[in-house]
Amino acid sequence: MSTVTVLLVAGWAIFWLYWLFAAFSMKRGHVPWSRELGIRVVVAGVVIVLYRLGVFRHYDRNTELWRGVLGLVLLAIGLGFAVWARLHIGRNWGMPMTQHQEPELVTSGPYRRVRHPIYSGLLLGVVGTAVALSWTWLIAAALAGIYFVYSATVEEHYLAKQFPDTYPAYRHSTKMLVPYVF
Image (cartoon, rainbow, N blue to C red):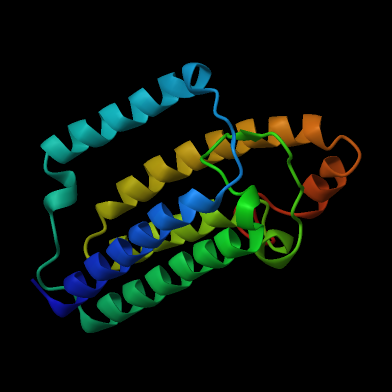
């Protein structure tokens, strides 16, 4: 296994361990699993089929050094952005599409740049993985992007109901996932 691969795996492993432990500090809420189960089943099914076809097992053995370094930098920036957003939102964080009992609208820090910085950071991390390992990982980035746009749209529906006076202005002034673009 190459040094770049080891660093990518270590970066993702550290991130997910942090994410798991940070989940214990969130406010309690309600996740409407039954209504959102369909999209999760479809995404999981597509990932399993692609994995069985060998899409994610392909690595470019002759990856140039610049690609490995650039991929690691993108991974670090992306996961760092997601962690910053998680730390900034604090106990208001929840699993995708969670409805909190005492919600607060956070519009500062990374949420000043994009409305869903955790999703943005994760997407950039997956793109970094694709750059460093294999362009076929862009399939994973596209699938994650589709799921994140769907989740963000559902979350925004709830936020618009919970914060009818403030959320529309915030939504109008801040992009969803990519600053100044989308």
